[in-house]
Length: 129
Image 1 (spheres, rainbow, N blue to C red):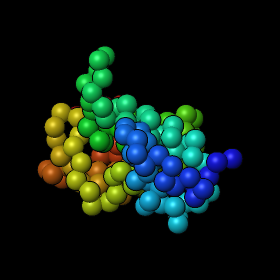
Image 2: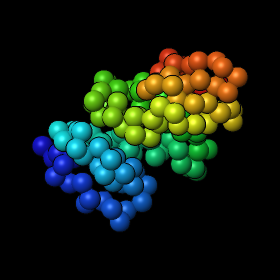
Image 3: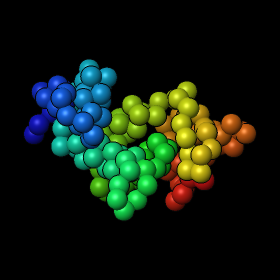
Image 4: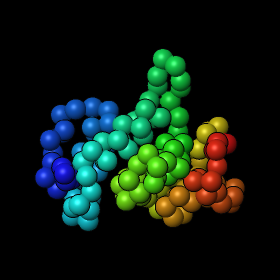
């Protein structure tokens, strides 16, 4: 099995999903040496697809990408990889944009608080508005 620690910088000159893999690798190698590279690539690819402008769909906010990854953890994605990736792209204290342009702050992994004080578990919502 390919492990993150063995391939931390092999995608450094690529864009798109690979840039998330490299950022993840640099920041998480010491903590998550046993996460498979193929699992990280799968999560990064879906996150990038959600966040990017496509001919068939508009780019979605970061919170929607995190929501998609969290909802599919355990079915489409390795739960440990999904958790670690979401902690990297939306750490507590980070301000993110929700669908509809609302802003929120990450309180803990999977939970955000809007600027008007509403707390939202993003893994439970089908749309963040």
